[in-house]
Each structure stands twice: as C-alpha cells, then as structure tokens.
Amino acid sequence: MSVTQAFWSVPPRAEEPAYRVCMSCLSEVFYLKVPMPDCPTCHGVSTYEAFTIEAIRDWGTEELIARAGLAQQEADREAALAASVKSAD
Ligand SMILES: [Zn+2]
Image (cartoon, rainbow, N blue to C red; front, side, top):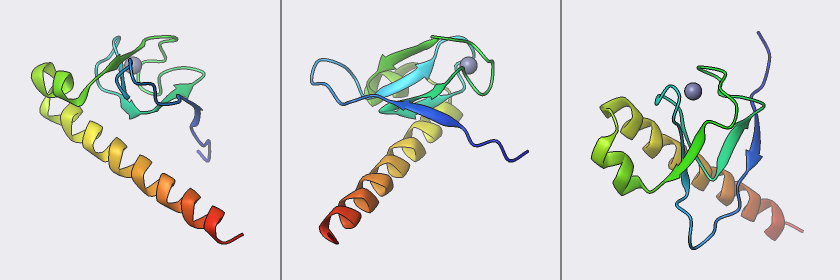
C-alpha cells in the first residue's frame, strides 16, 4: 500500500481555470495538476475538466468544495517550498 499517486502538472494559463474536476465520479478535484494514469477514485482516464472555484462552489457538493480548498492550500505550500529551495542556492 505504498503506492504514491503520480501527477501531470498543468501549467497555469490565463484562459483556462486552475481546478480540474473528475467528471466521471465528481469526487476528485486537483489544483494545477491531474492524477496519472487515471482517476484514483473511479479510474477514469481523461475524465478531468477545468473549472474555476466559483463554478465548483456553484454546483459542487460540500465535500468537493472542501477538497478544492485543500488542493489549493497544498499547491500553495508546494510552491512556497519550491521557492525556498530555489532561494537557498
Ligand atoms: Zn473519478
């Protein structure tokens, strides 16, 4: 049970929302990345679509909205970590 989930990172683009929601199970959401090779919950491939947080709040379940918030916090933490590693050079 030591399998680590791998991700494709999705570079931020102005014309595209940052959140990716699995349209197959609607229970997985990630921020600027998508799990590979498939959705960890329903194992759907290429089921992720881009949404804004506003859209997720509009139609998402409480759980999905909470997960979206956590996904962004995690991304912020990773970005801060990467920045501190770079500035240590
Ligand atoms: Zn899924």
